[in-house]
Image 1 (tube, helix red, strand yellow):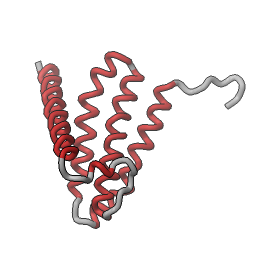
Image 2 (cartoon, one colour):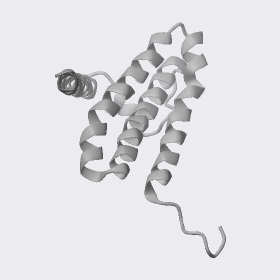
Image 3 (cartoon, helix red, strand yellow):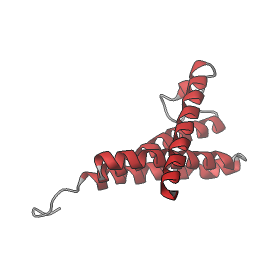
Image 4 (cartoon, one colour):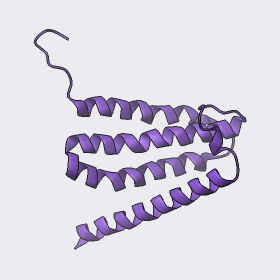
Length: 136
């Protein structure tokens, strides 16, 4: 940067993190295919789409372009964590330290399934509400 140039604004900086977090799951795609589990990647992409759709409108209305950038980045971060957890289950190792509690059956797995189910249910209801608004 020269002396006359200004620093980049926050939204492009956030979108750089989005691009980084979006590229990480691509490295495990061949692992899923080799393990015979291509549906894992499909489910993770669907989860990211639903979460992004649920977050985009409220965050954009409240925070403008910065909210849109954050709404794109947050689901990507979650998908990276879930991708590395699933890849670790396939190869039998913990890839991302701190997520080993996600592999243990019991309370945490039930709780995460419940929370993910509720989030998906709310996201689908929000999506159907916004589609109904668009149609009418």
